[in-house]
Image 1: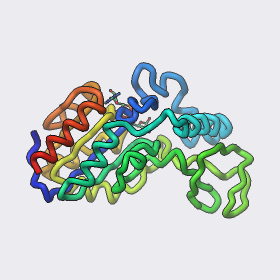
Image 2: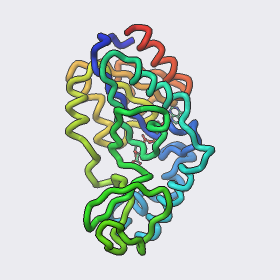
Image 3: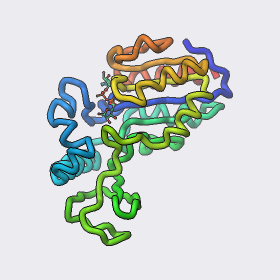
Image 4: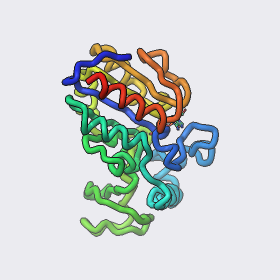
Length: 240
Ligand code: APR
């Protein structure tokens, strides 16, 4: 078990695996999103340039799915909110996920490094606004009235993830780094464990299977997030 003084900062990274038991698909599992649609077509600036309507259809469908009442935060999301509330030091949650289940599970100190499904942005004026419905190439920006410049506020491959400076500052000062439900295949998130370890943090991975970077962690806890995360939070709080 990683030893951490109660007043120490914890940084948590989550990926699609933490939302799987809420009914949202992961990307690289056998039944994942990239087994059904080419990421080059829907998650790159080039794909958007080539066929914006295809990209809008893809995110409109995911937005509708996320808005489905059957999709709710699970015990893992709720356990992380409990840790943020009850841990004597800071808990910073960095998620690669674009769903809003961490917020709905009660987390507040949260960074969406890959953007958010329920937000869109205008490439003409830069305004970022909430959008729970559909957008398409004919959408008019309500701020600057430009047509066709509204896109998902989602970071695509080849684009810079959000709030990287704040994330690295936290990694370099944390005493515990926890990675949950991510395959460890996409950078820069896949490299966070090394930044934390270099700064002297203990590192723990909770995942359904050993991730690509599993050997970089001090500890690996295998199993579904709704079982492993609440138990891990109990362990941390009992030691605080
Ligand atoms: N509990 C815990 N882990 C799980 C569960 C579960 N119930 N179900 C699946 N997993 C694990 C899988 O074993 C896998 O290692 O979650 C991980 C999901 O990996 P990916 O599908 O690659 O998702 P993620 O790591 O979040 O992808 C990172 O890639 O496509 C881009 O921008 C996208 O943010 C995404 C990034």
